[in-house]
Image (cartoon, rainbow, N blue to C red; front, side, top):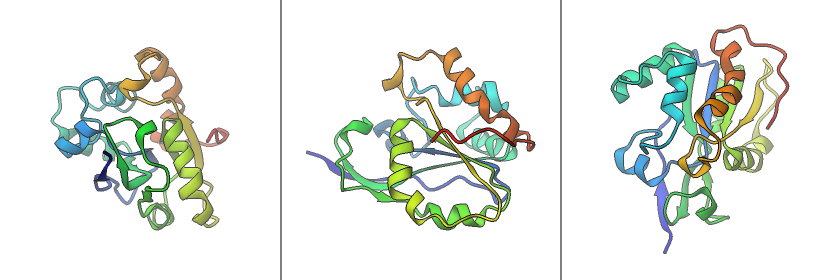
Length: 181
């Protein structure tokens, strides 16, 4: 039986330039109340390589390092019914999107929304895009390969290469990349 799950709060500073959105935290993350808590999720090793987030840092230190790098975290879905952790188990129609539109509108330095996986990209298009007004500053949307252990066929090096498109925005100089979402 699917249980009703509630996601995690956003970790987003007012000067966020890159907003990384997952679909809905998995069971390990919800139980630990930490983003990307599953030991085989490659998110934190990626952030070590791409955003200088020390792998040996505590969770709190990792979040501070992300925010210093101009990166924020949240999920498209704030509540849904799902059995287990797989995105494919989310009961369609049970999803309730997080309050992303007001957040995105409030972030004056936001330049890119990075969608962690195909499900996050699909959910964003379905639940957020239709309500998103035209922003004063263009904000790119980029669908990236999932860091989930369920997407283990793609190795860490290939993920790092795909996610490296975020580097210009993290450094504050990103322009010109086409939206891929």
